Length: 123
Image (cartoon, rainbow, N blue to C red; front, side, top):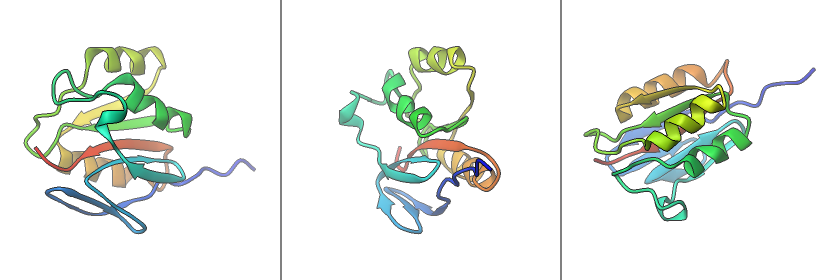
């Protein structure tokens, strides 16, 4: 009865570009039912200390149960220890991976899981 909402697959990834069927972003927030640009200035995200809890919170608000966090193509983007603690306190399954690997993992889960991702398309 309660049909799962599908997360949009990433159809193209290249330096500076993340593309779904509907949209193209530099960095992307993807979640069950949609996606949008990931604007780091909204939460004060920087390469160090990295992804902030507020970045991930929006994915959970869209009912993501598995979270994929990308580290960038060259793995320069970190994930704040506060973010890891936040996800663990929520009992959330998460993966922190190099961007191409993160996209592959995310796309493999889209059809059968409530998955969300933060994809950084550069460094």
